[in-house]
Structures are given as C-alpha cells and as structure tokens.
Length: 288
Image 1 (tube, one colour):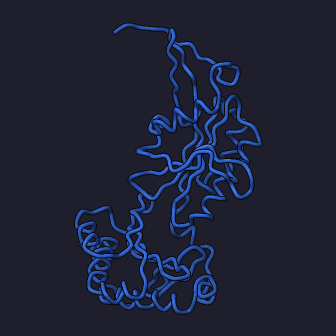
Image 2 (image 1 turned 180 degrees about the horizontal axis):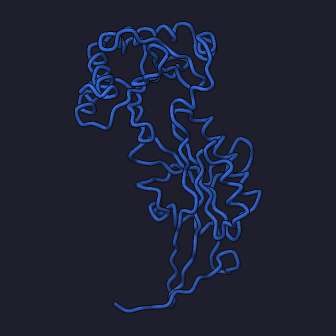
Image 3 (image 1 turned 90 degrees about the horizontal axis):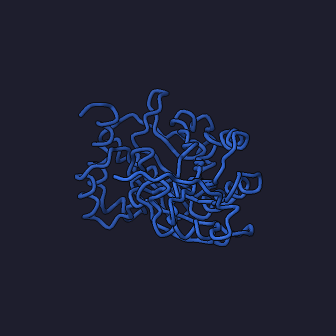
C-alpha cells in the first residue's frame, strides 16, 4: 500500500469549497460524521424564529433526531446560539422525538468548547471538529467528535421537579388522566400496590415511597404515551406488530418501547398490555 502525505486545508479560506459544499457531502452520506445510520429529514430548514437549519437528520434505528449546524473556520458566539435556538425550535415542534443539537466546525476552540460543555447535561449537544485533507488532486473530510452527549441524568434527577394530578389535567385533560388510571389498574395484575407519581416531565410509578418506573406515562391532548421499559426484544416486536397500536419508536437512550394509546386501544388490547407490563415489571425487578 502506497503512502501519500495529506495536506490539511482551510475550507473557510478556500475559493473552491464552501459551507454549502460540506452540507451536500454530509447530506449525500450522513454516516461520515460518525453518529450512526442517519437519513436526511430536511436541509436548509426554515425556522419560525428566522434563519435556516443546515441539516436535520434522523436515526433509522431509534427515535433520535439531530439538528446540525455547520461552520467553516473557528466556532463563534452566533453559531453556538443558532445551534441551540434551532434545536429548541425543533424539539418544541416535534416533542415526541429525542432531539440533539450538533455543531460542526473546522476549529472548535478550547474557549468555546468550555462554553458548549456548560450546556451539556442541561441539553443534549455534540461538538464535531471537521478537517479537510487534500492528497494530490483528491480532497476528503474527516470528522472527530470532541464533545459527546453527557447523560441527561437518571429518573431520580427528573423527579426532583414533582407536580400533582391537577398539573397534568391542565396539560392534557381529566379524560386523558383517566386513561392513565386504566393502565395503572391493568398494571396491578402484575404489580399490586403501585401508585402514580406526578413529575414535571412524565408520570411514574411508586410503591412504599420508592420509584419503580417499569412503565411511565406522558399524557397528551388526545392520547397517552405509554413507555414500557424493556430491552429491544423480538417477542415484544412480534406481539406489537399484530396490533394496530401506534408504535412510536424504541427509545435506545432509556431502553423502552413508546406506544401511543387511546381509550379504544386500552380496551381492545387489555390482555396484551397486561402481558407486556408483566414482562417489564419482572425484568425491572429481576424476577424473571
């Protein structure tokens, strides 16, 4: 194999290449940035607050979505603010998705890496440094993740902000909360004695003052999202495929199935839900 010395070139100072060119290369093959099996959902996406999001990418294997902002040269304040703003716009627009902000730049300076790190843990953000390498008449892009997502915390951290039933009735409705009650009643077939715990971001399960979130709920206006904590499993998949339940996704971050349920789903598939919840409870409690 022949050896060839590569030359690092500045895209910002180049007369041949620009940000649009980089965007097109990533759009043609999103795998080059090293975030997995991604597809382009949108490019140059117009934002309600003004401006355009460079790329919006979806993970084919999860519920993850990436808001990508590309910058040639060194990172600066405006691009970081734009990255966070566009991420915030998209997560509000599609709250059923898991969103992650991504800034890609040729030079992520230590100063701005520290600034970006301050947001990490509060919001999911990734910083990727991009280098353009030239060998003879060929150019290649090389991407290095210099800041990965810090875990958003475990369930206990989210539960620091507790609420009450009235809060969730205002977020959805009393009728929708009664659907949560219906699933709670179903869960008692396997896990008697559990009660609902009302947190700001979801409704969990508790017993004897201890959180045991083998299932959680996110009430919406016309339905509930039921999260069933269980490793991705072929048996689970096959059982769900035989129904017309809205299977939103499998959330790899929290290892849980996300199902959208309405009243008719709960009545029609009560026995199936009992079976799935029983499996989740036993796995969570190490009883299987």
